[in-house]
Image (cartoon, rainbow, N blue to C red; front, side, top):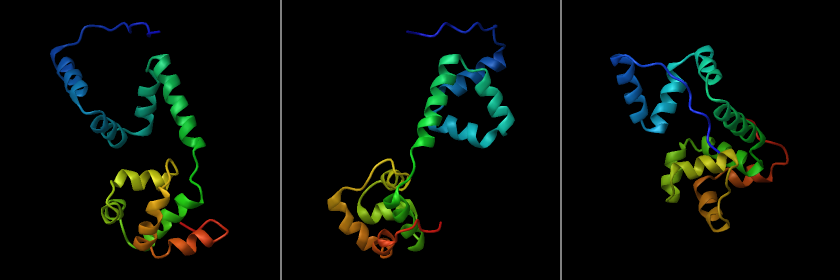
Length: 139
């Protein structure tokens, strides 16, 4: 099922050049540009003019992101990494993995494999104590 085409008016040369530039941007570059280059009211205005199907997909993504909460392991990894004075990239380098994997652990999207926990404990001395703590560690 495809969305109905959006009616548009012809673009002048400058508008056409901007549209071509935006369509040629890498999605992450475009997203970064939106996050940092627009105030909240302008960004909300852009969302309001999206087609209904895009708005629904964005709302569903927002609900899913809000529902995923970091568990005790995710919080302990982040806290131990910060106490060790490491960035996600530095921890990833020590473990031989990508920074994005560390970020996914810290957000609770994925968990480290059981065999990786030993090297994680070696890289983060406070991790064991944080995992033994019954309450959530302070951020």
